[in-house]
Length: 270
Image (cartoon, rainbow, N blue to C red; front, side):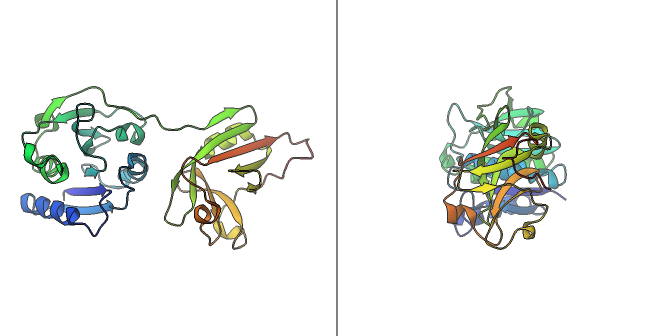
């Protein structure tokens, strides 16, 4: 079974989704098409990269991922197909793949494109054909010219200064929970089991405990938890924290650790 996934910023009620699916089925009638999401914010390659980074590995190896986000081509961001960890990705080299992968893909190919009529809709012309060529068994190296470099966007990393981690919100999920770029490993490496305070945006939004479940905290109150991605998540139990407190992408999240002998510190509890 061949699988092609779609990740776009089109929104599900647009004709683009139906057109691409029809083109795929017409050329590859036995393929399975799966919508990862069509709700990416317009042109937001960072959001697309986050969603794909944390979802693609759950699909079988050999899956082909078409990405229709900020996909118009130019000299600096050509259409490409790449292979990594047994998966194929088709999209524009607009910096998204640098955010998606920690290491360089095994193969990167600049796609041959002789159809100048449909460049405003490359997903229908270039990406669909490339995906179906792979489904039919064409070698990736036959699809264009191999290249070695991609334009890169550098992911925002948390900063560490002695007993303080300064991170930021990098993703807001459908519950309006705020996912940060602070990992579980970094938290415990810097914290060394010390007391701590988590401060979000200002000193008035303060948390001193890491939950194991959301319901440990009363409904309507702030909480912090390490989610399934092992990233620090800030939420309100049964509430929409980003909407209520006006948190946004890049809102600052600070963690202050205190010496355990300092009475001003707060109890560390997990």
